[in-house]
Image 1: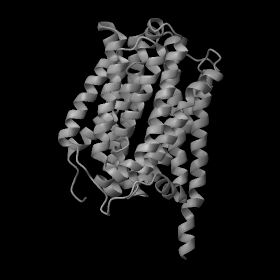
Image 2: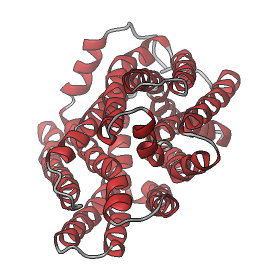
Image 3: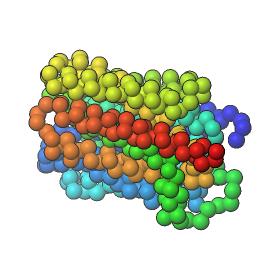
Image 4: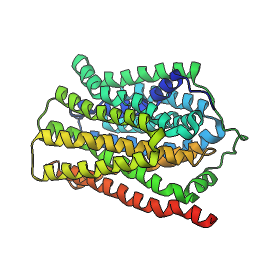
Length: 396
């Protein structure tokens, strides 16, 4: 499409994607209270995050090819409807078992709505997909910026159940707007048959896409290590209260938004590959600093000031890697998104068990795991160079 995409469509797409960070982040401040009222351990409540990520990834694996075949609009409406119903059910549970079950369903439906968005952006922005993805990410980041503060505010005014009532209300609003305004944008060619394995074969057989897929996956691993560990690091270890936690969490999200804003300004001139590598350099420096600061047991300020640029760099890396993947698959953008999302949320689900296994009462294990993720990104990008050089050598 040659015309400039309408701003309201980008806002709506960002609102659809924002259901996921709201569902992940909004209840973080309520975890200790939930553990007490559901008569379980804080560890069991924390496992609900890993369960959400795992089922989100599974759902994307299923729904990605469905988006390419059946259309993006109906899948988004179905997913948003299920998200609303699951959120209402979560507000009514009285046991941890039912809470975990409904969280799984919430994730399954949320992914069905989210998986359609990159494909729509890809067709709206074409060769400038990285710019479009930056816009969506920048607007969507308001959700994790506000979510912990909103959760703390709801908890102060009411109870933890009301957090999920608010999620249901938000999902219903987005559903109604999507019903009215979300366009159905299909590829230029004929409608594809629903073929899960054939679509995934196309994506995984594209050798030049593999380094970027690995890059996106490991960036997500580092991010979810932070997300899973941050309540312990800030609240338990450094002793901040719920309001300070919201401010510190919001500061990190502001860095994510700043990174996407900078990317949207520069990526059309510099290219997504160069922007990704700039983010990687920053990530290696900041992750190394974070690890050293926590090894030497420096104060909270050092942890905050090293995490902030690390969050910004991970955003640069993930946004540009995802855009380069989508640009390689114009007719299989839903399947490509499913591959990205499944690997991203699947490896993110490992963060909780790995952090629990390596727990020693300090922030050092989470710092080391984030650094490991960044180093794996660097290895993936070293793999990128010879892969990208193969096609020209074959045509000479």
